Image (cartoon, rainbow, N blue to C red):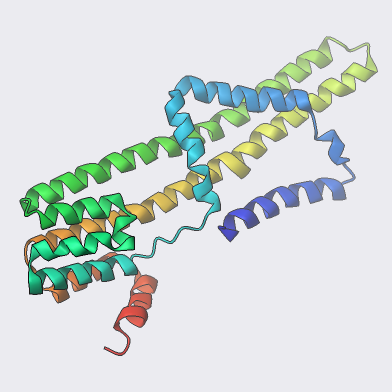
Length: 264
């Protein structure tokens, strides 16, 4: 599990609820089915109007990525490319076929496809072009997912205001009935809370975290492309490694040095 996601939700929502409790506000006051229906139903409807259904389904399928801490450490990828380059250098490109059964390569269709193209002797410019086109397509698809959550984060506060206006209309039309007056005011304010709260505590943070994780995976694809092109061009394994280390930030470089170069 991604502990930062869990902590973020617990601390964010918990702090608001605790603050409300300390102010003496009964939490049952916040539970307004009518307001929830207006805000969440209206937000989903507006999003469904903007995006085709399959895009929304893809966005919902991406939610587990927010909850699961998937490693995007580039170190193992660089080391795997090192193994490929050494095999190619010593035994030839055809010997790369044995590496296709490697669990790490087999689990990544993008990586496996690139290795297969290099092994088959595909013109190296064609290899780069094919992999970059596929990477661009993956990023475009993921970009739509981020926009789904960003759009929901934009619609929710506005729908919340709409719920507030509807609540105030209800209040104005029942000025002579104190019971309905209180109910309308509660619905009005709670709808605003639902709209602003869901946007800033759920939709926008989910979109932002998915975008950050997508950038990390995009960097891994760039490393794969650069490394496989170097192998296809017959470059020295040491030169390939040094160039790929340029993709790493300081912390990643230190980790790589300690993990793969220590004792060399």
